[in-house]
Length: 291
View 1 (cartoon, rainbow, N blue to C red):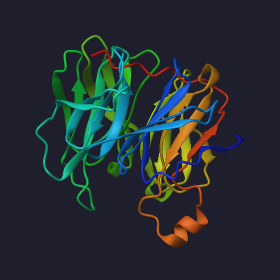
View 2: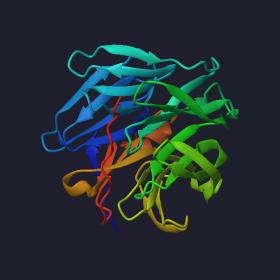
View 3: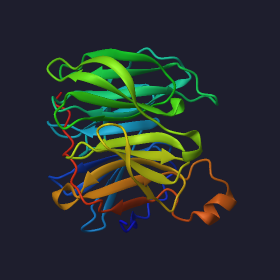
View 4: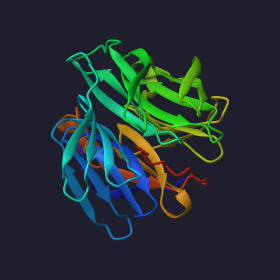
């Protein structure tokens, strides 16, 4: 069994969106509700934070420098030297939705989705968007309750996609040349008593890793959607995962404190921290936004 350790005592309200940067040997991540974009260097223990002007769902590093982020109302560029945040594209979305998880495909396009967040049950008001290199935005899917984990198979023929409140991870056929989706079907059903599927990453062997919000665990599925292993965590609300470290052989896990009462926090003093463990295989480097 992999040894789970606290990599950073972050105590985040809603830690999300970890992205490893091999060039800087640093983990970028967000606290959606603080709201802030953050960076952590495991080798030195140093951290840095950039305040955001609104709720932040996800980030991607940018090939030309800085980052692209999905804030509550849309896509923005962040200058990591000055901290300046510049609106890029604000899609027309209902007032009771916000942007959430996002990821870059291996042609440098940034994908991010929205979620209904004005109470439960979540309504199917969200959408999935693709931000192209020329900054054009295309709505790729609708009827989403809580847009979450994204990832691609190592051969780029499949795109995995999570709508958390359906308790399901889906998979599309993916055309990387044009960024097109087809043939959506169920990849894995997640029983509600094991939590809700949240952030997702794909390893170099094609295994799909999913964080189970309220389930206190990380699940690895084989390429056929069968559970290959379950890794228990010391917190109930893991949110997202990303490979990093030397050789991309460490799995980093963000988590949340938000919504936990005092009794729950006493039982889970590390809620909101970032965890790490070595699962025995490597990940795939996250592409940078090429726009």
